[in-house]
Amino acid sequence: QVQLVESGGDLVQPGGSLRLSCKASGINFSIYTMTWYLQAPGKQRELVASITSSGSTNYLDSVKGRFTISRVNARRTVYLQMNNLEPEDTGVYYCNVNARGREWWGQGTQVTVSS
Image (cartoon, rainbow, N blue to C red; front, side):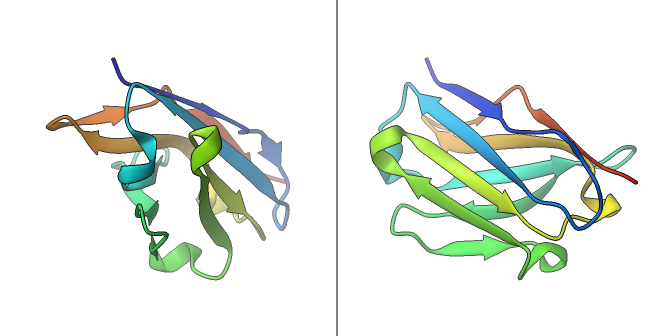
C-alpha cells in the first residue's frame, strides 16, 4: 500500500522558517509528481507546491519566492522549505501523490505562524 508520512510542522513566528518532509513508501517514487497542500483553518485544501519527476516545480502565487519544493529520490522524500512565513501560511500541510488511479494523502503536519 501507499504511505505518505509528513513531519516538520511547528509553531513559528512571522518571518521564520520551517522545512517540511514527506517520506513515501509503496510507490515507485521517482516517477511521480509530488505535491504539498495546505488546509488553512476554515478553508478548503489548496495546492501549495508540486514537483514533477523531472524536477519541474509549480507554486501557489502567494508562496512564490518564499517556499521551495524539492525531492531526494534516493530518500523517497519530498521537502517543502518555507521561508519568511506569514500568519496566512498557518494550517495543516498534507503530502499528496496521484498513483495507482487515486489520490493518496499523508496524515498532515501542523504549521502555526503566530506572534
